[in-house]
Image (cartoon, rainbow over all chains, first blue to last red; front, side, top):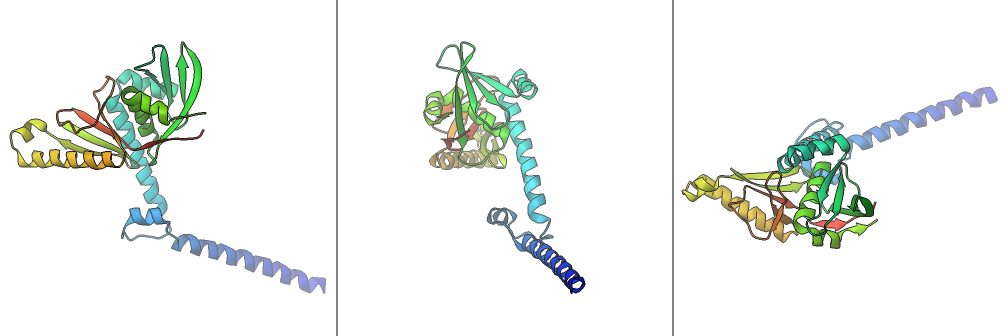
Length: 156
Length: 83
C-alpha cells in the first residue's frame, strides 16, 4: 500500500506546485496596477514586460533630469562635494553658525550649530520625487523659506 | 532663455521662454510666457512654493510669476515625515 500512496502523494504535490506556478504567472501577466495603467495609457505591448520596463525607464529618466536640475542650481564645487561626500551643506540665512547637512539620498537633514549636531529634521514632498529633487527641495526651502521649512519639519 | 521648472515624479517639467523676444511681440514666445504663468498659478494653487534661482546664489521665494527671472523652480507641497 505505501508503495502505491507514495507516487500518488508525490504526483499530487507536483501537480499543486505546477498549478500554483501557472496561477501566479497568469495573475502577474493580467494584473496592471492602477498607477501603471494610468501612465501606460492605451499602449500595447507584452503584458509581462510593459509595467516593469516602463517603470524602470521612467525612473531612470526622472533621476537623470533631477540630477541635471541640481547641477543647474548648485555651484560646481557644491555638486562635487555632494557626490563625493554624500551630503550638501547649506548655511542658514537667519541663524548665525547654523548649518544644514542634506543627505544625497532621501533621509533626515542634520542641523549643526557651532559644529555640533543639535537636531535632525524629517520633511518630504507630498508627491514622490527623485532623490536629487529632494536635495533641491531642501536647499531651496532652507535658503528661501526657512521659517516655513522649520515649522513643517518633524524633529526626529 | 528663461525657464520655469516644476519638480515632479518625472524629475521636472520645464517650460522655456525668451522674455526679450516676447517683449518684442513674437507670438510664439508670448504664448510660452503665458503658458509658464498659467502653470505657475496652477502649481501655487496646489500648494507649491516658487523660488527664483541663480546658480551659486541663495534662492529667493517668490509669490508672483516673475518673467524676468532667469530660472524659477517650483517645489511641490511638503509635509513633515518620519525617519
